[in-house]
Structure formats: structure tokens, C-alpha cells
Image (cartoon, rainbow, N blue to C red; front, side):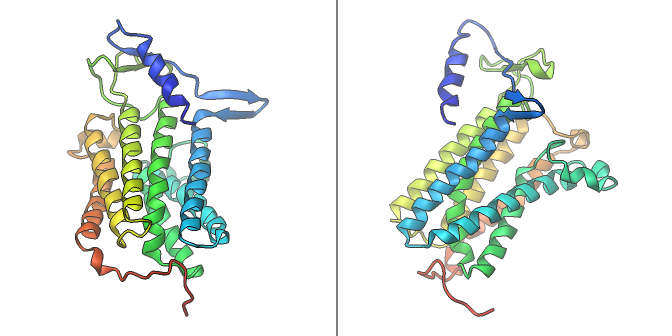
Length: 287
């Protein structure tokens, strides 16, 4: 999926004399009858596939059974989808979805919220840790590495959908999102976020490698929460509000929801010793 990046770069360079970039990419790759393959869905699926291979390398390095990873993958899929969908419905459009709960399950209509996905993953991994007798902090620390990469791919999917873009700009890299009937250049906030998340993924990988696969419990998770959600908080200032009720707010919903995660991340970084360092990732416990 990373081959999209050089194509995007070449696309930008092809307009060196213009004050903006016209973006009219079709979000649908191809379709056969009622079945269609879209960039967003492909990139979303790629996040799980690449995440699986990265986690497999981590599990092998730390001597953990790959059967546990197969179980973990399903927890991650359901936790992400359910959390992201409920997050969008309850935080951004409760007036529509609460009276029409059946619409919630129609994930092809409406949106997904990254903050809801974060909560869904936290809950899913807690359940996983209980059933699989796994250290909750151990699995969270490692899963944040692949989640950062997933955030990068999903934001690139948003770009291909011409959605979640920024306010108007006069900068030469402003995008005119033709498919959304836009006529003025806007900040490509999807790209800002995507590359920020890619850098965060690299940083987390370096922390893991520098500590030879045994970082102090809570450090990776804390760094993830602080870096990801500070980036999200700041970029929201130049992003168009997703729903109308945000227009009169000092901070929009994305920023408000980011604050608890930032505070939690700071706590984890300042007090990593609050977690007992168990050398065994998976261990037998009695419920």
C-alpha cells in the first residue's frame, strides 16, 4: 500500500506552477456488479494485515505462541470496528443515531471515530488479557506500534475519499477537493496527520529496538497516547468541523476527546513504575 506515497508525490510535483493542487481521485478502485473495492477499505484492511506481520515478528522475538496472535487479531478487529462506529454515532451524531439504533450497524453509511476506536481497543484488549492470561500492559505497549501504522494508513484512506480535510489556505500545497464540489484550496489535513503518525510509528519502533524488545512497562503506551493525540489536538485547529454543533465551540469534539488520552499518556510516562514488570508476557493465573 505504500506505493501510493510516491504516486502522490509525483502528482503534486506535476503542478509546480499552480498555487494549489486539484484532487479528484476516484475513491473506488473498481467494481463488479454491486461489489466494489475502494481505497479506504483496502487501506483499512492493509492496516490489519501489516499489523499482523509486525506483531508476529514481536511474538516470535519474545517467544510467545503465534496461536495467541490469531486470537488477538480477532479482538483487535472487533474492538476497532465496534469502538470506532459507536464513537462516531454517540459523540458526533447522537441526535440521529439514538432514535434510529438500526442505522448504527450500517457501517457503510456514516463515519468512524478514532477516539471511539481507541476506547474499543482498550476494552477489547482488557478482555483478551483476562481470557488469555496475558499482561494487559505488555500487550498494550506492543499493540500501540501497529496502531500508529494503522492510523497512517487510515488517514491516507480519508485522503482517497476526499474527506476530513482542512480549512481554506493560500499555501501552494493546498488541495481543491473536486469530488466534494470544493472550489477553493484547503489544508490537506489528512496528509498532515498521516505523515505525523508514520513518524510516530518509526519512533515507537526505535524505542522498542533500543530497549531490545523489553521496554519498561507503560512507556510505549504513554508515548503513543501523548504523541498521537497531541498531533490530533493541534491539527484540529485547521480542520473543518465534522458536525454543525461544533461550530460554536472553543474546542471541537476531536480536541475534547483527545485531552483525556494526553493526560493518561503523561501519567504513564511520568509514573511507569506504577506497573509491576512481569517478564512473562503470557502466564497462568487464577480468576
